[in-house]
Image 1 (cartoon, rainbow, N blue to C red):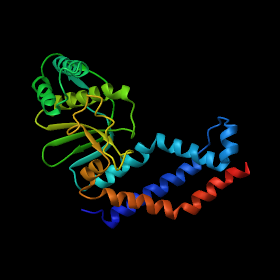
Image 2: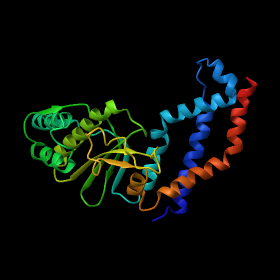
Image 3: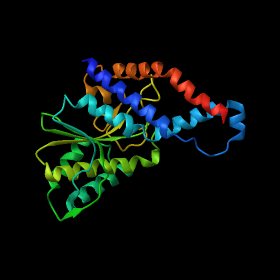
Length: 260
């Protein structure tokens, strides 16, 4: 189902506001790069620095609010930066460690359904311990007893972080099941876009940590899951329209750096 006009306007308004606020607060990096600056010009170097600065918080300022706007009429609950339950049992921790050991040693392949079943059996067994899990970037409850815990990542996360990502997903499931053991819990890594398009996203296949069918949503799969079928192209068109409408404004902003 394509985006309606209200959703499109809300997305575009958010983009306009975010970019203009960024212009007000933005200060280029002070690092001197004399060769690059003389070759490319102060305005292009300022633009390069601006893009890098924007990328560091694109998830919280753009992607998370976008997810809320797309999903608020589709799900029972959708929220961002949610603090999960902080209680986990000693038996859950043992199961999680065993899963991690098997994956690291390649004794088993990742299978999220089986992993959740193992955790669910012991989610209330053993000593209850308090931990400090990371916040859930996007939290969703649907109308069919499902809870989705989404960890939004950059398009090219480092390979060395894969194990930490997997442990976070398992711990989220364990602490959520401790107080919601009647629900179906899904913990997921989400990548907002595919930098390898039109080729498939293959960065994770070598890691052996994630169940790619159950624990990873990339680009169209992510946004169509949150917003409904076929919304991804509409989202890109919203971004394109804002970019075209602000082209003159953006050019004028960065031309000011030539005067410095």
